[in-house]
Image 1 (spheres, rainbow, N blue to C red):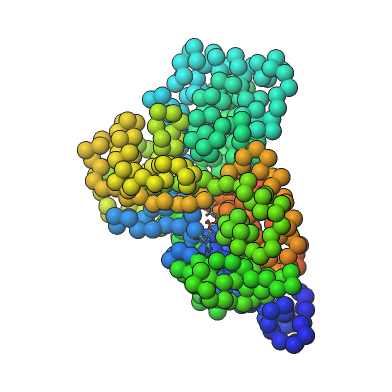
Image 2: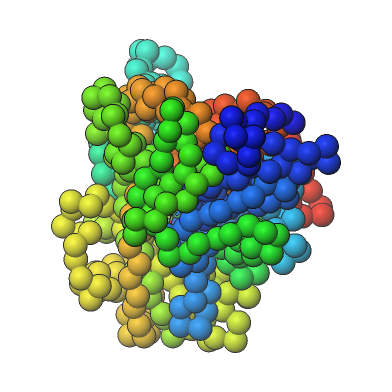
Length: 500
Ligand SMILES: Cc1cc2nc3c(=O)[nH]c(=O)nc-3n(C[C@H](O)[C@H](O)[C@H](O)COP(=O)(O)OP(=O)(O)OC[C@H]3O[C@@H](n4cnc5c(N)ncnc54)[C@H](O)[C@@H]3O)c2cc1C
């Protein structure tokens, strides 16, 4: 608890205060009603802080929002929630208030007409690849493991993966998908992406589990099951927004913020695109980092240059309504096949019954990734729906005659691109923004971190603690080790509470 009174002694800009009961008088402005911004607002309201939140969209949830489509509920692609951090699970459980289920995960890779389990299972992979290709994989794996390949540069994704899996497995299971997703060569992709996102797979361990069944894992892990709200991932954030509003906070939907206002090196409010100004004692921003900086006055050239090096990848989601309630069994599929432009296919029928209710059709979503200057981004909805129909027919997962309707959703800047060396540029921006008081930068595009929901929830949580308790958390350092998280064990009572 801490207090700082300005010259007027009033609860105005620059005033932070609390009374003995822990009720704060300060006002915090939050930009964005995604997991990061809403968690911050939710926690602050609980602590008695006055909160005013601005969201450009008309609903809560950000990229994790859910919406109605053809009388069913869908998300923006697959959105499983998982975390081994008890603080994150606690807040998620509190907001979802029991309205969730544990969903068994089935995800496979579609490659050259075959389906491979993901995470990879050695027997399945070797069987589907056939003896010759399997030998090639094993050979190139051994070349790496025995050190025959020499010391490999692991600063880029390519070297990082090859050194762990061998070149052939890399080419089959990582290269095409990653290049589709990021739109750059894997040699240009920073190894940070691999370190955060790839489940370790050891051929030795996998073979052991085939030959010695008793060595198979006895507990379900985050790889096997995930928690999911009955009415879509966005439900959690809708609940948080409602709580904020019911407890004195103000949420402005449909209000895009143009810039943060500063005075004497301190954030003192925001200005909307419509020109309205709103003032507060602290600003938490989850708007795109590059947009935040671009709208600031007097930005040094070095910082502007650093921003110019940071790029985001967009997603186009093409939803198809299929007149069949028993398509393929996966929650989602990764499409590695380079003859197809789509990278991932979600089958919402395989998540929870609350999504489809009594509907007898299935909604699938096909993801296409591109930059804003790519031709794909500018195709018409009709062209994109035709593309999706042609591609799903190619996979033979759906009979094209059963496709009844299509819908397109474009989501901008959803992937912060970890191009090799991006960290150097991000640090320049971080150092610059750290020079301002009263500003917290959080979130997936807000802090240019390849966050899942749990990372953004944690950022919001810790941003609130920094404000309320002067906790001094380094928000930039959040985005935890993915491998560690997925190895966490799920308890019998449901959500993860222990670590393996
Ligand atoms: C296709 C896809 C699949 C994913 N799958 C998973 C998954 O399986 N599991 C998982 O945990 N995560 C998944 N994610 C990631 C998850 O969606 C994000 O980590 C999470 O939504 C990030 O939350 P955030 O609050 O940081 O950002 P966002 O969700 O992007 O929220 C930011 C909010 O700020 C608003 N905003 C932006 N600019 C302004 C402005 N100028 N003024 C006002 N408002 C503004 C936006 O409208 C948005 O609502 C997936 C993401 C995508 C795109």
